[in-house]
Length: 150
Image (spheres, rainbow, N blue to C red):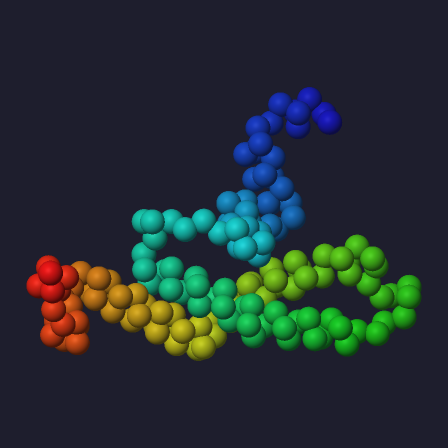
């Protein structure tokens, strides 16, 4: 490494890397990679609508787009010099997962909007029902308590 590059901070190098290779923001890349691996962190301050949208996007990418990409890659019977290498075959699943998430985010699927809306409604209903006072069901209210039986 040259002295100028060695003395650069990690932030400088990652910013340069993003400019040179047209890569997205490093924090967003880490979050995307973590979500592909299934290690997403829940932010308690996240807006419920944003959380519902993120959940819907993940669901559509995993349940709809990723299987389509897998099927397309499995049907590739390219001969040896032009076919995928062992490394490509090994990391194909991670690439499909990342590509599926990017496609779903960029395409603005109506299905994502619908699922996100339904999730937001369910979350609002669950929050409203958890704030309501709890009463015993009518069937339990008619039965005597243990102290009344003794």
